Length: 321
Ligand code: UDP
Ligand code: MG
Image (tube, rainbow, N blue to C red; front, side):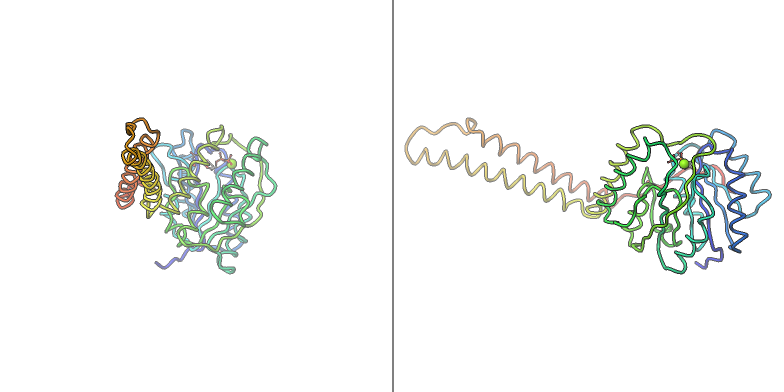
């Protein structure tokens, strides 16, 4: 597909009515100053305030403004996914709607993709203006994500400000809460020229964070675990379950040999043989065989499911402009 637009800016938003006019004006200012052709895609993730009316107003005065309105709040990942699908620019830039990310970074991010040839450039909020309760767990989270994903040069996986080559966003599926791991998704899809750029960060001007609470960390780690599993075994679940199942069967088999051996030696020596159920090895054999069978079953089911996974990215879009 021939792309004629330089940049698509994708902005997922949930109840950010106060920030939108300022954000829009700022993006337009930067685009005009650099002579970029552009579009701005606001993805309204089921806001309950007047965000959608604001977007409609903006689109009346600026034809570069597009809007997607979810019928309900699905989350940042689905919002990004639909924004990605709709984007037409050669370079796609995502940014949060809350004015914490600065549109002034756009020209340099664009240059890094187009001239330096990176697939993905992630912002790095070296100096953050967020409460400590956010920044400390984030450090831990990023260290783990670096280790698991093997992308060692990223300090800030979750930064909302990122730039992508168009092919990247068209070929990955951001779902669930996976927006925290888009670089990992990109890498798994084969886009491994990933770089980082230190970006300006500001304190939230209006409203409050949509990602409070403790469970985001638990969920964050569980998501990382699933992504790792999918990346390593997603296309071959039998390899992991079959392996574990084989170990179980092997242990069970050894236990059976021991039980049988005890019985046999007793018979050969002509002493009364103990009941097999008196031996702990009998129970070990039993358990291992049952577990082994179940693991193999899980493996077969996994294989079936991985061949039929479709439709996990169907969202109800109420309107588009
Ligand atoms: N957001 C969204 N859907 C949600 C939650 C958040 O589209 O369910 C948007 C939000 O409006 C903002 C961005 O995702 O544009 C980042 O959210 P936030 O600023 O609350 O996160 P933080 O900066 O505190 O990590
Ligand atoms: Mg924010």
